[in-house]
Amino acid sequence: MSLSLYDVSIPTFLHSLRSLKTILDKAVAHAEARKFDPNVFASMRLYPDMLPLARQIQIASDAAKGAAARLSGTEPPKFEDTETTMAELIARVTKTIDYLEGFKPQQFDGDDNRIVTVKTPRTSLNFKAVDFARHWALPNFFFHVTTTYALLRHGGVEIGKLDYLGPIPQA
Image 1 (tube, one colour):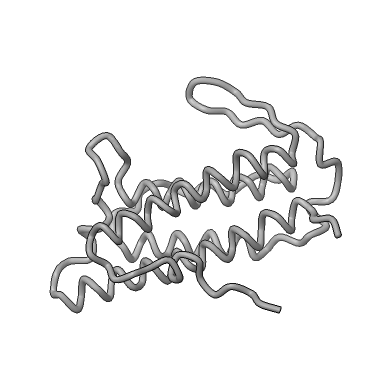
Image 2: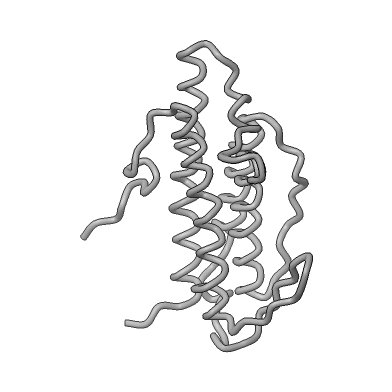
């Protein structure tokens, strides 16, 4: 059985974004149970030169919606990076999930070797679509989701590996 670009991207992004939303909800509940403002999580950093939690979530969102758009040949929606509260960050994750749920597998049909260009502040990178999905889009997305998990765990939120993995489909 071969997997399409849709199969390796959209269901994977959706699954992890739903787990991310659950983790963020647990962080809010954790803070409320301990009677502190959950929004302090939004500015947490693992190290001074690393981006804060809010930015990690924004980048994970951008990575997922940008990959879906590039792989389907469409334009991603522009989300302003203005979220500063946990409620706003959860809403952004929900908005990203809603966007990704709108894709159909046939939108990804085509040449898996077509060129996908990613422009960074320093350069432009050109990938075959399949390599973009496997070696750029998914690892970049997971880096920021994992960093979010690590920040919340470091902040005392009682989450574990199963929260990160989310409900795993079984045969």
